[in-house]
Image (cartoon, rainbow, N blue to C red; front, top):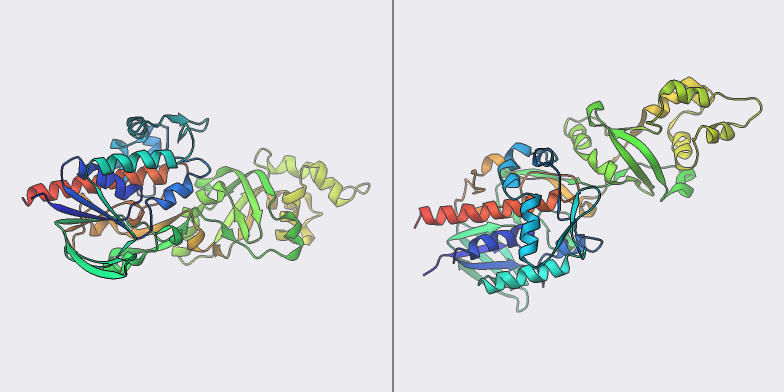
Amino acid sequence: MSKRIAIVGAGPAGLMAAEVLSQQHYDVHVYEQKPSAARKFLMAGKTGLNISHAEPVEQFIQRYDQAEWLAPWVKRWDAAWIQEWMQDLGIEPYIGSSGRVFPTEMKAAPLLRAWLKRLAEQGVQFHYRHQVTQLKQNQLELLDLKTDEPRTELFDAIILACGAVSWSKLGSDGQWQAWLQTEEIEPFQASNAGVEYPWSRFMQPIFGQPLKRVAAWVEDSDKTMGDIVISHYGLESGLIYKQGRGLREQVKRGQPMQLYLDLFPDQNAAQLAHKLQPSKKQSLSNVWRKAGLEGAKAALVRELVPKNIWQDAEHLAQQIKQLMVPLQGFRPIEEAISCAGGVKRDVLTEHLQLKSNPYVFLCGEMLDWDAPTGGYLLTACMATGRAAGEGVAAYLSDSA
């Protein structure tokens, strides 16, 4: 009789684990509390499914905060592998100008349909609207949400692919944390999320406007360039997301959360000071406008730089080149694209097996790693899903 395996969660990590195990003729059951699979994956793919990133693998690996831990899996199932896998499903990949990998049709739905069809053909059984309420050793307590009937089932191995805690309405509600010991989990924090600042009412006309071509950093070595959108709650953009790791470190160390901006990275302070020299013939606004300090940038300077400095060109230029924004925190974790934190590396074996319960393997965003947007999150979810699937196969063959 073939060994029974439960996979909890039908996101990309769980589906990849199912793919690995279904090819080895195990009896694979996927439990998903939502009425259908991979809802966050579909949501991410509405505007174009950025599934990976075509860049040299050594560079790719460094995008992760846990590069050394993830490296063996991400190197094996990298962007090139993902593109071949897509083609096997009949989906042609397309590489954008920035190296981002998409399906040619851009959408996630055709890819997901083909993937689920293949998994069903390989014998994977899907149990939608089934909630796991408890996990003990190799036993799952399940609640059929259609009939409200509870039942208990035993498995030879269990893979948890339950996601983190952002976008809970799409399925990743973090309830699984109750099945593990508190010390096994690094507390979750918002990642790839906007940051908050309490603007004065004078900033309201600027909401939604971009700060074009600025540099941002927390520590000097992490300087990145791009655009930032001023929103009603603070600042938002990919450039802000890239600084998230440094900002979380500040919080962890008990320091105030401070972000630095250079509003004119293509000019040095002396050049800028020369342009900002006050003139008796011109208003301050006019001087600023001619220096390129207008719109959102001018509003930000008025908001954050003391008024007594505005007429002092050299001092003002220095402030503009190193404008400190004292932040109040991240947007709620519920709104974050992803989360930092999760199940700690040291409570798992190299096969992603839980040391405190060898029947259980974990993968995807439940694990304590983080990455920027750009295809890195999905790549690591899929790679750790495959690693957990292989871990289960090795464990079951050893215990056979």
